[in-house]
Length: 201
Image (cartoon, rainbow, N blue to C red; front, side, top):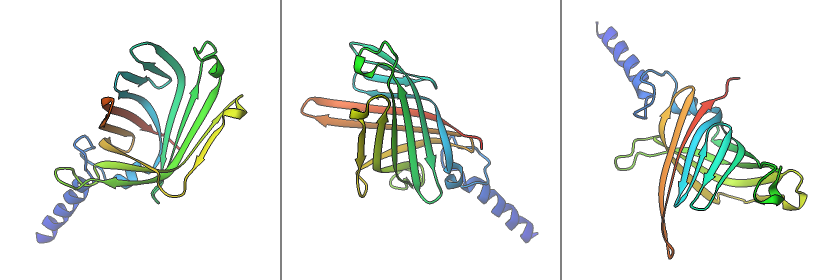
């Protein structure tokens, strides 16, 4: 009888122990690390910075501010490996009638790589409830603009971003962040909500 109770306790602990976020699946035999590892495609997203908003619907990225609205073709992919490395790839294609004629019909690929890790566990923040991305290399290549190729390589981490993980399942990842930046020009509130779907091999 004791063996059955211990087995039941172990099984329940294993299943629920892998659930870290409030919106994570109730039943999962995979750890958060195992669920995160792989390639993810951004399905939709919204970024806000002051009076400017970017909304991505899976195909188009629409930038809106107090003076204008711009729309470009866009794709965004994130890849994480079990060793703690990540790569993000963003491809922006500007329309032929783009207001900035120097970018008309131009396609730019921005690749960022670095290290990732789970954070959290301080105060009321749950362990592994946040995702830290430490960038150490950024490369941008634009078509038809060889003079505008911008390559930046840095030894060691040069920029970190911390996302709250609202949901992490085998197939869906929801990342969020909110920051407040104060300068001599005032306070700028920046927020983001990014919904990703895992690529099927």
